[in-house]
Image (cartoon, rainbow, N blue to C red; front, top):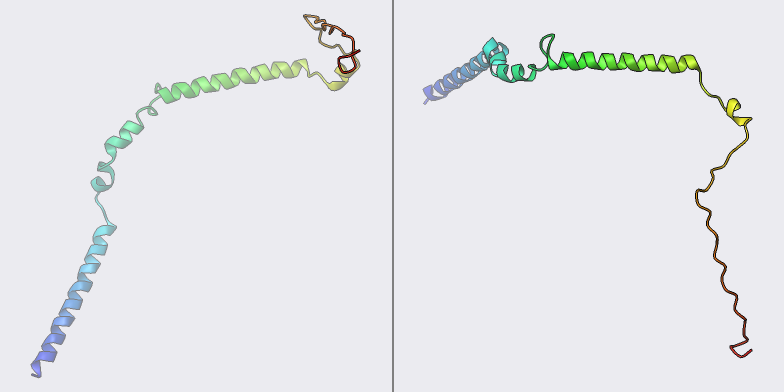
Length: 122
C-alpha cells in the first residue's frame, strides 16, 4: 500500500514534465516558419494583383502619365486665366442694369362685363 502513492506521484510528475517539454517544442516550432509556408501559398494571387502595376509600359504607368499631362494642361489654363485678370464687383456695379425681354407679349383677355342684377330681378 505504501508504494502506490509514490508510484502515482512519479507518474504524475513524469506526465507534467512531458507536457511542459512538449509545450516548449510547439512554441519553438510556430516561431520559425519556412519561407514556402509564408510566401508560396499566395504567390499566384499576389502576381495577378501586381500584373497591372509592374513595368514602365504597364496600364498603371500609362494612366499615371496621362493624369500628369492632364494636370499640366489644367495648370496652364489656370495661369492664362490668372494673367488676364478677374472681373470684380466694382467693375460691374457701375453699369446700367438690363432686364430680360419677353419674347411673346401676352394680352390679358378682358372679361365681358355683364349687368349686375339684384337677385336676378333687376
